[in-house]
Amino acid sequence: MANIRKRNGKWQVQIRRAGHKPRTKSFLTRADAQRWIRQTELELDRAGLAYDSSSLERINVADLLHKYRTEITPGKRGIGPEGKRIEVFLRERWSGLSLAQITPQTFTQHRDRRLRQVEAGTVIRELGLLHAIFEVARREWDIPLAQNPLSKVRKPKAAQGRDRRLADEELTAILAACDTARNDWFRPGILLAIETGMRRGEILNIRARDLDLELGLLTIPQTKTDRPRTIPLSEKAVSILDEVRIRAGEKNGRLFPVTANAFRLAWERCKRRAAKDEPGITDLRFHDLRHEAVSRFFELGLNVPEVAAISGHRNPRMLFRYTHLKPENIVAKLRKSSTELAA
Image 1 (tube, rainbow, N blue to C red):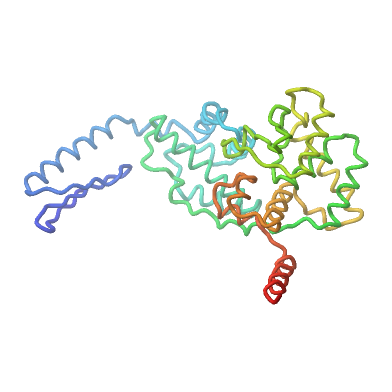
Image 2 (spheres, rainbow, N blue to C red):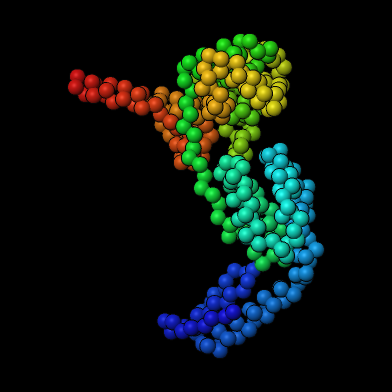
């Protein structure tokens, strides 16, 4: 549909067509405007004829899911989690629907049902993946969808970020539980997480060649954000890594030669043992140690750029979500400042 109006001495035209971005242009004469309308609408009609819209009835959602998992997912670092999400989608009844039957309401209902089963963050990630799948289908696979059915689906509000801090008693209980473990890599892994704020995957991928213990630096070549970074190490972190390096022995091998799943299971076993002394520790997640590390960095007096250089956060807002300062420590600083000013 074309709209034409005269404004400020010019003829302004806007053409709207389902499945296309609105096109707008201004002309000095009405005749030129009408000529452009005819040409543009003809182009849009030809583009529409290039597609066989009946093909939407012959393709179902499962076809897109399988194609995306085969062609796109393997190129991503999160291949494991994404593959599992697609498996969840394939078990849904709507995966058997044709693309001609799919509407935004299909995924609105999916959203509401999943919110009764899992946390909002999980649903947000699922909707984001579905949106990406349909967008690739439209833009790269020539699937004649007029629009992305996820574009009008409202995402749920994300839950408030965790503010879990590690208590001294909990750390004592965890380390005591580590002492009964049958491996020698789990205890240094926990201590390193607290000293550096590194993610589990980053810790497990540390290699001897990534270390410069004389300068106190550790290079992380592969990160969640796909941006390598070099982080400064505390004296305690240097000591931990030096001990692990000597124990590992291999010049360029991984210092923590275990799988992510083995590390996760060790963490769960450790928590169960520690819970005998600290029952509340059962809700502690390994990722909470990253929160603890970032908070400690700020309590040590490091500024935002310095903490970001260690943690790898590129967005200050995300960095602050990981920061949960203890009010009692702030009170101590305020009192110390007041005392120094009085003196």
